[in-house]
Image (cartoon, rainbow over all chains, first blue to last red; front, side, top):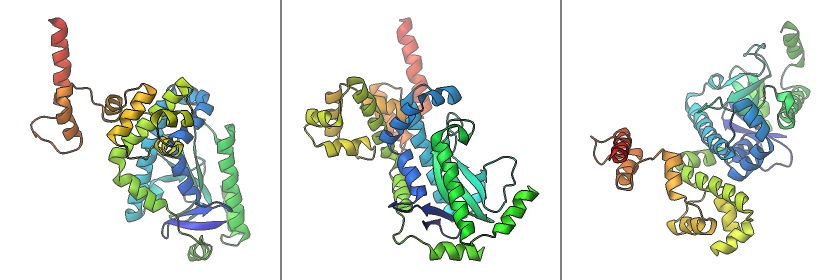
Length: 180
Length: 147
């Protein structure tokens, strides 16, 4: 895998092997593609209704595109201001937000309901993140659905890679987990 | 920290990402992209209802399937002729429904130009606001019902 700077010095994205673009680019391509979104929401129609009480797939698509646009603008603006801790928050509420290699998610701006868009990233510094992927999260936990579970696996894989390459201190990471 | 950045820089992808370029383009063109995306969503929905494939729609519209595919991506700056062709081929209204859905327009035909100018941020008459037009429209409908 290789890495692409999204915001130089602070936000990077993984580009997985055999992929033309990075994970960050790919999630926004999907979130702004009506055809992809239609397939997704038809496949997850039950969750959309069960968790968000949304029955109209067309509305869900339109809101997703609008939400992705807002999130994208936010990131573009952050490129100027540079405080990523404003949009990324700890994945697991019980864990500290400033932890080393924590799994982070960027939540989309909410419109008519809480946003279901998530960008997943590893925190590797004070305000430095590496995006590993993203998902439309319609369920309470990531473990409940295959596509969000897949994102967890990707985060784990990238984290293990960074540790194995000696980019981050594995010992320090273990100590941290123990302290947590 | 420097160690992390040094690693990332030394493992940078050989070709630059197009994300920023694309994102800035989408932001600059968001005004009309919303309409294009709305049209794509409506088309996909109607095509499902009618069980029409992209190929048969292309045939009905006398264009290539590649062009239909581009329209359905919601990033095509459509001409009025193309919109009319889509409306005719699928038997749907796009202009009016797009105005309603994207801009929240609910006024009458005669109020439409004023509304569009307001929502575009270029007020023809600074004393008339969109909300006034909508309220005026609602009041006139109530009045019509009474008479």
